Length: 118
Image (cartoon, rainbow, N blue to C red; front, side, top):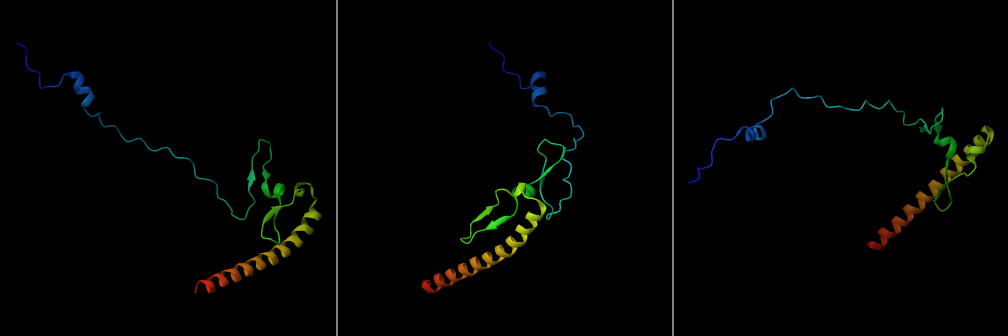
């Protein structure tokens, strides 16, 4: 006759089901905080050279076209300082005028759409 199964766990079962001895909790590893960032400072990327490259110096300012699309100056990186200053002066004023015109146009369109809906 077969003996009934033992209700006491064997040493192998005890080692599997027994909780591990309590050890002090390990501190969570964290990354160091990022360096302070000035939101107005140009973004500089390290591209494997000894000096970081400024995206603004390479890409230049954004141009607002009369239809509202945005573009950049293709040869901005090759312009000298005097050319860049002149372009910035003209672009700043022209972009402001074009943005105001587009905002006014959108407000007129939204006003007409709301009048038609009523």
